[in-house]
Image 1: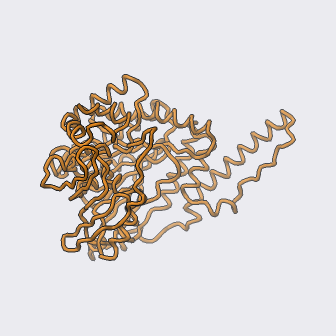
Image 2: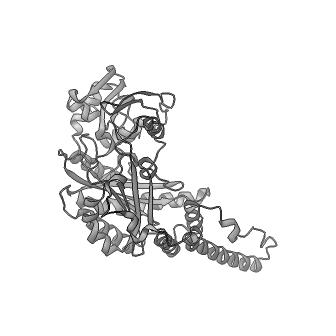
Image 3: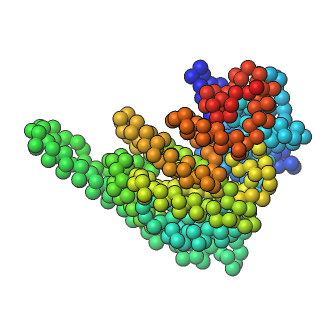
Length: 463
């Protein structure tokens, strides 16, 4: 989140894997190393990272500094697993921080890039392993009723809610060696695929052909009314031309027809729901291949985190939040595409993490809303951006207020009005120890070189 008009520091050249300690199960890397590089390097030692976010091409410095996370009731965000940081600071030169540095270390783990330039990170590792992934579909009611059980039963679990339908896609992941003869997943009805790939993609392809036909009819009618001799020159989409398109490409192509029309988005969501119903099943792959996944094309995302009880007792905030959000979407007629992703994590020991609560057994829920930017049309992209950062994001923040929801640091955007900025500042003052954090900023960066306008507005200017 360190963007500023005057420039940025790029660490892509600092991408070495410094060392792997197999006995202590830690890895030390330069901060510009990509997560995918680190995972590949660890594979040679039969190790992997303890938690992974969906995107593999993040650099390790940013990966920990913004508090990236995966999903799992007992799995903390990635910053929690940092054991050592090396920072180059404007005020104190190069410093190395560990657990022995106490509060300073726990403030710096999610330092947002404004305490200094993180140049080296040491993280805990775990043994490499394969996961059994199960994808299946529930109704809204079933998802609410089974959430606690599913979270307790599975190491990793996430929900993907599809607005304006009664469909929740559930994805669970468990170590392959955790299954025995009584829990053998191969005996499950979903173990054998019921649909071929062509049959799975059929709802999306059929809708795209239908929309293409409708658009051509409209264009032909307009051309006849306006004596346009260029009518019919566009190459039509055919069954053959659809064969090479993947799921993300098909969704973008569908939404691109009219991404801000509610009825159109509902049609797209219904087709996506049917796709997932035909995609239920299992797969077994190395953990990093399943926990990191394709998020689709260009998009706007707003993700918030809020407490939902303890690991041993979920207080139900997670399901009530989703009910409030989905009701708000329908009430305000928001053209919300799929999915609304819901994940969970344990508490983080990093003081500036949204999942920090001063304990190690807290349970936190992360919910992300999305708008896609399916074309390069600048006018359409501006309209989508304005709708997302306005009505949809306003709803998300309004729903999240009573739950103490806090934005994922990497998804924090400039408030669009003074009163929204005031609300944001008040919330952050209540959520985080900003006076302590800003004192550390002043000590490590006395001229405030590492911040930008957004951070100064939200956190305040160091004393």
